Image 1 (cartoon, one colour):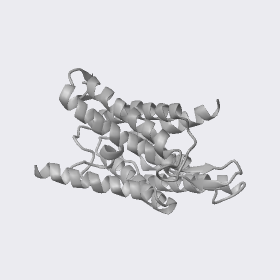
Image 2 (cartoon, rainbow, N blue to C red):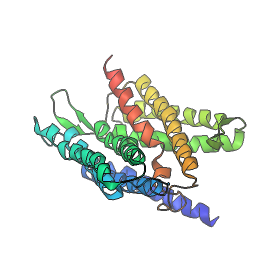
Image 3 (tube, rainbow, N blue to C red):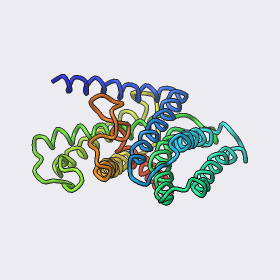
Length: 289
């Protein structure tokens, strides 16, 4: 009972912090730059426990946070012209350094270090950085505006999917979804979570996206919102399974203990690490037609 209370309080505070951060662009940028750093730092600590692995945890973390901030500047139109691209040069220099440095560190298996270093950037830094692509949108006049409805909706869909999957799976779950990696998940729970998300997507399309509740709009049609919800469900589930496979490979139950009752940062954001890039790809794809 005590663990349930701790988990509930932590969950409420976590959701409140994420939702509140989307009220102001500065708050969103600061919070997710911090989250990016904590998650990469946690990842580095886990992989460095493996035999033959010794990535530069500090520089890798700084590089990931810088990439997030560079994407913020690029997407928010803080810089103009060529200067918008120049902001990525320090990141590229850091990546080159991390690769060349292995020549002088005399590690027994530098390929492991290169692989895990680059994986931290692709798996963690890039997805979080793509939140900026969702949050900063250009108007027909070419003015870049901060609009939190798309990035916030991705997290809402993920939370609703988890809630729906847990409730339905607990009551009706019989057929295992992916027993080799995550024996607790069921097809019934996944379908239930999907139905809940589609219902929420319909509500957003009809009562939020037209500005009736929050005065915000992304101008997506109802079917586009339903498609986004489905994409987030599918890739969010895969994201959860990918992190479960990672933990099984490492041989751990939780990625950390920074969030009481919820484990570590990877445990909390595993679904979003695939759902965010998938949402960006989906939205750009439908914009082409």
